[in-house]
Length: 103
Image (cartoon, rainbow, N blue to C red; front, side, top):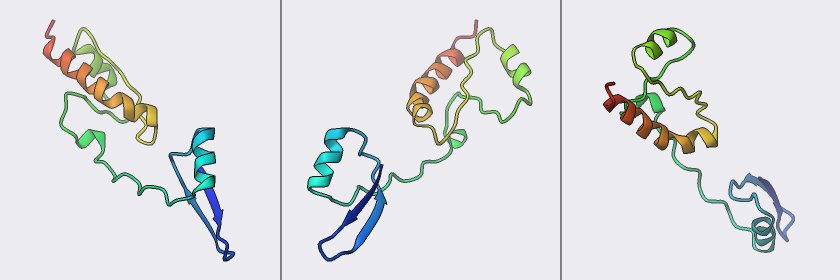
């Protein structure tokens, strides 16, 4: 949520506060405004993290990659998407399981 505050001295400040998504949180903030927590540090791209996940950009090599194994799990990943970020650990675990399954 984007929050705009006005102090008694007339100064306005606007900033983003990612934790304000529920009515109760917004009301609490409006009663006692505080600076939001600092943003989380940037994490390394998923393709640079050690895992069994095979990363591809575009369709180059896709058919060949999915034909090498009996089972494939495909995820279309957007690094800015919160749902995609939350799915990374489960997807990585599934990739490790499929890697260990040689049948």
